[in-house]
Image (cartoon, rainbow, N blue to C red; front, top):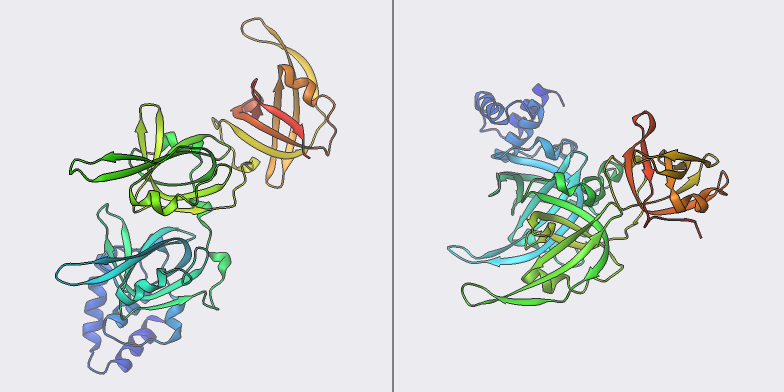
Length: 383
């Protein structure tokens, strides 16, 4: 609908509302939105605030998550569920319960807070990770860290896997995962999403807090092929995930917090973090590789016959080197196999599929990225 059609729909649906009041409200919302939201979308929010029913067409005007700002009402958003946090009770001047979800669209991630009856959506068997969910007539607030979140109360509507939403428009958490090898560039205490395979698992330890209560902590090592990181799980989250963490199993950690410890970076898991089982491949695609990534595992097809030659290093050491091009479904990259690895690759033929583990990415000839081996690298034909 056009601007005038939306205004006319509001006036016809709410006889007590004047055109002047609608336009005044629109001007105020424009100022608050700072030009980030279209007039038509703002008018639909205003209509919801007046209690006007705009019909099913309103569902077509969901906002991108990145465009949300605090203080909006009548907001409609949609996304793929990437995390579910179970309902919790609250007490005070009022009693009730709340739960939350993390959803993703092409523009980013968003926390959705479900109040009272709506919190039941987060109970087991209701909304699941991977579902597409549309929320209508919610309102936005700023959380304690300054991020926008959408709140869903009694008058809001929720649709799970609506038929008119194309799931292809909503990515999985994988789009927003940070490679473990790139965590060093993440600011301290910033929230991150990581995924990988559990390599080592410690035992649960207890400690005494300053108030004499007892806390719990669990540590395990997560690897994604680009590196390893220690994940530290605290208190009630330990009991929640202990059955999920198994050596060799895949996990995703959503909303973990990066911290620097004496032995390097750690990812900390608390009540605001989601941990779930994930089918994870330890192999990186060639297109995803960047300079400086280490402990990389790749699988691909030999695209050129390996060329063997001798090179002299800056230390005047003469070494054997074999170079060849590797390809996968995402791209191509040169491989430099040094020293004893020359014997592993010199008889490879074009079309052979191979697995390379524990190599690293650097710039080679012509500043092109290449995979390079070290002593601990392994190269073998795919079984």
